[in-house]
Structure formats: structure tokens, C-alpha cells
Image (spheres, rainbow, N blue to C red):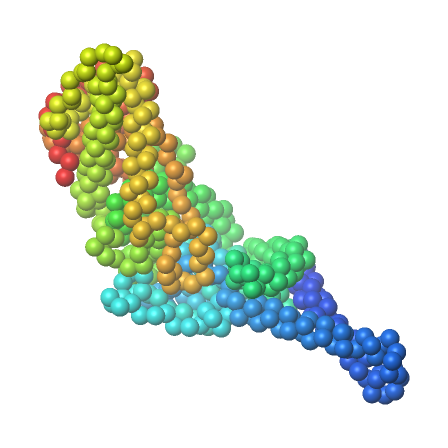
Length: 568
């Protein structure tokens, strides 16, 4: 116990020393700004006292020194005003008022009492697998949010700002996947960080660094504030190492203090963090992202992560035994209305990782998991099949136009028949098979990329704006901060679109239905079973121009490739 206390005090002492180093940088900057003024005061006092006679060098220099002092004070005042008034960036979160989660607040306060540290003043959720403390004492963060003209939506149902700090931010997937005891063990070192955070020197150093960082963001792209930005960057470079070491000392002190709380469970909780992150990542990329691209956002993402992780536990031998935990009390039971919280966190996740309007609307509406196959999967397939059919028309127009041109002095070739070609799987097979199939596939992929870029550019509501910063939990005008996937290649797009065309044909002619796989996203169900073998046959068609495996698959499932596919 003595060693634990000594380790905790050592970490806190190191953090305080680094905080003082950061504050010395601030004091040095103030001294430099006041130096010309001090010189001007000395010259003026010397003149008034007769120590500096008229006509001397000192008297001659006094006007220039005074002017320099006034300019330095003016510039220092501008820099100080920007640093003080600039609003530090806040993490976009879903605030959780105490009346909506009294049990969760009680758990956090019990943790704080046990570790003898101040309790966090408020709790908020982030749609990510992480937890931390966040200072929200800046005056600009205490303004009330503007009410929505269309009434409160999921993002505003729980929105409330608090003036005190720090705020405990918890990853929302943890609440749904972890059990209460595991969450308690996971939060112990985070809550322990309120102890060092309450020290005046550490708090002042953090405010100074955050103010400089905010001033750099404010001055960016503004020529009139170029000097402010340069000064803030110089000061940040001067105190960056000290600030980093200060945070390491705070973390070390918090970790040592938390050793007394549920140490054995902390190991289990850390294992669950890795599993939760893996399931959350797959759910966002493979399940949520297709819905977001369709203008729909799943309203129960956190509940979905439980289903995804349970499925992962069933498939992955490394995760065996984790499913048995589901009989224990989940941490989301600490919330009074977990469904409302999940909906708010799901909307925030959609905005963070994809962008979109702040509230639901005609082109940005929630979708439940029961509606997902019909409202998202089937619609996604139809849209992609229609796009592939449209691009095929454009490509065939170009090819027919080239072949219809007569060579010099040669006879004119007949003009192409303008009768509309029905959208069928057979048409796709004919174009992509044979020796010229890969070349045609490459041209199709390029045209699909161009078509999607055109459609995305025309949709101003979802077009991300580069360089847009978010400093407000209200997220007004948010563009995606953390895009999930890089742009897809033409071959990947063609694979998706051909697969969509075949799935539509299977639904229309073979009695198949769209389905949802919690780990792989949209899937095709034939006779109630998922047909994952379709992907292999499509790749053979696109990469090798070999359509026989796909034809055999179509025959096995009972798909009629010559029948037109319903596109709408």
C-alpha cells in the first residue's frame, strides 16, 4: 500500500512539475511582450528625473521605443484576446443528464469516493470505443444550444451542457456490450484522472495549451490574424514536450490509484475492449455504411453491436465463452431509457463517420433492424443494378458508335438499333465473358466511378467540406470527421454492381430474399440460408472473363438470367 501511494504521488508530482514548465512558457511570453514597455518606462522616468538630458541618445530613442512598446502591447493584447476567447474544440458527444441515468452516476461517484478523487461533474457518450475526461469550463462552452425549428430530434432529446469540469466521456458500445462490473473496472483509471485534473497548476497549464491550439485554428486562413497564428504555434512548440510529459504523469498517477479497484476485472474488461472494437468496426463498415449511403441511419447501432459480437463469438473460436457473459446485467441497464440514448448515439455516429443533416428528414430517416433488409439491402441492390444498366447503355453507345464508323473510302455500316435493351443478367454475362471481358470490365469500372462521383457531387447535402472543424457538440454543418472507407476502385465497384444485379434477379425469379448478416452486412438468403458463394463466381467473371461458374450458380439457385430485373 505504501508503494502504491508513493507511485501515485510520484506521477502526480511529475505532472505538476511539467505543468509549472508549461506555465513558465506563458510567463516568458508575457515578459517578452512587456520588455519594450519596460524600456519605454525607464527612458521616460530617466527623462523626468533629469538623468537623461535632452539631445542625448536616450532622449532621441525614447519616441521609437515608446512606439515599439505600444505596438508590442497592442499585438500582445490581440494575441491574448484570441487565445482567451478562442473556443477549444470539444468532442462531439451525447450528454447524459443525471435524471436519465441515476444508477450510472451512482456507480461513477462510488468509484470516485473509493479512490478519494473528485467525481466527474457530468457524463456523456461518444459513438466510439474509447473513454476519457474532458474539460468543458471554457465560457464559450456554457452557452445553451439553439432550439431546432422542426422540434427536438434524437440528437436533442438528451442535449444539455454543463459548466463544470471534467466531464466523463464513455464509449457507447461499452455500455451495451460490457457487463456492469466490467464497465466499473474499465472506468476506474479514467475516473481516477479527476484527482490530478483538479490541481490548479495542471488545470491552468491545460487551459493555456488548449487556448493556443484553438487560437491556431481560429487564425488559420485569416491574413489579419497571421501574427496571432505564428505566435500561438511558436508557444505550442515551446511547451509541447512539457504538456505531453504532464499528461503522461497524470495518466500514470491515475493508473496507480485505480490499482485498488477491481484489478482482476480490469484484465477481463480490457479483453472486452478489443472485442468490442472489432465488432464495432465491422458493424460500421459493413452494416451501417450501406444504410448511410442510402440516406438511412440505423437507429439502434449499439444494440446491433451486441448482435454482431454475439455472432463473432459464435464463429470465432478465440471468442468462445464470451457469449456466456450475456446472462449478466448489461451496463446499458444503468440508463433509464437506453433506446432513446442509443438513437441519439446512432445519429451522432452517422454524422461523425459519414456526414449528413443534424436531424431526421425525408432523405435522412432512421431505420430499424427489422426493416433493414427491405429498406436498405433491397433498395441498395436495385439502385446499383439500375446504375450498372445505365452505364452499360452508355458503354454500348460508345462501342457501337466506334464500330459503325466506316473506314476511309469504305462502305457505311448500318446504324444501331435504338430499341431499349432490358436489364438482364444475361446481358451482363455476354459483355463480361470471353477474351474481351476483362477489358470491358475495366471500362465499366471507370464509368461507374465517374457516375458515382457525379451523383455524389450533385448531392450537396452529403458532400463533405474539406478542412471543416467541429468545435461544438451541436455539430451544426458537420462534414464527416472520420470517413470509414477510402474511395473504392473501379473493379470493386463493378463487383458490387454485378452482385447487386444478380441478387435482384434471384429475388425476382428464384424466391430469394434480402437479408442482414451482422458481420458482413447485406446478404442474399435462398431457402432461408445465406449464399456466400456468389462472391467467388462474380470474381471469376470480372477478373478472368469466365462466366461458367456463375452460370452454374444461377442454374443451381434457379435464377433465370434472361428475365428482366426490376430496377425500381
